[in-house]
Length: 241
Picture 1: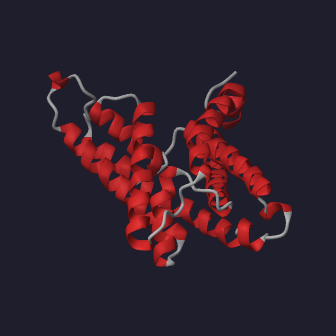
Picture 2 (picture 1 turned 45 degrees about the vertical axis):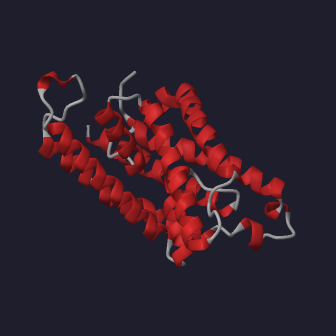
């Protein structure tokens, strides 16, 4: 049993590592960042602040929003026909546990951000700095993000706040998570465009990479689960056989 838990934690941390690398590499292509961190990215660029630190603050907002949503859901009547929180204290503790996860995750991002170069400028004149090269790295970033996300989620431990807020909104409004994810991505993109235009006079962080991330990450997650879910679960000790 203990061995199973240790394996799950190892796989979970490996998933976070891949997710942080994928998201960071996405930003380094200069082709647009994924919607879930586009607001944090634009604010960090405008303020010339640390991207990982701003992401941690933005994810903290997600966690606080989850706590408010779950508190509201706990007060619903039995006959409301919507998702209802029956153990508020346990749910809030589970939400709060996302904060130390955020801290670890954003430290990974800072580490990779310090190592991975800005492809368009630092690699100018090389294939990596060309549009084709950056597009290739973008595809790699999307693959890493999708694999990292599904790998950490499949361990059934603490969810990433970006996934947690989507699940909480879906439960609150009684809507499909996929639909809510699309709406939430749209909200983040709109907020990023608004903030960057107001404070920088130009759009920051939104581009072809944003669109491809919206389409590609989910497809990578689905394909990885289809091909490797049972093998990963078996290796992590989630089920026997």
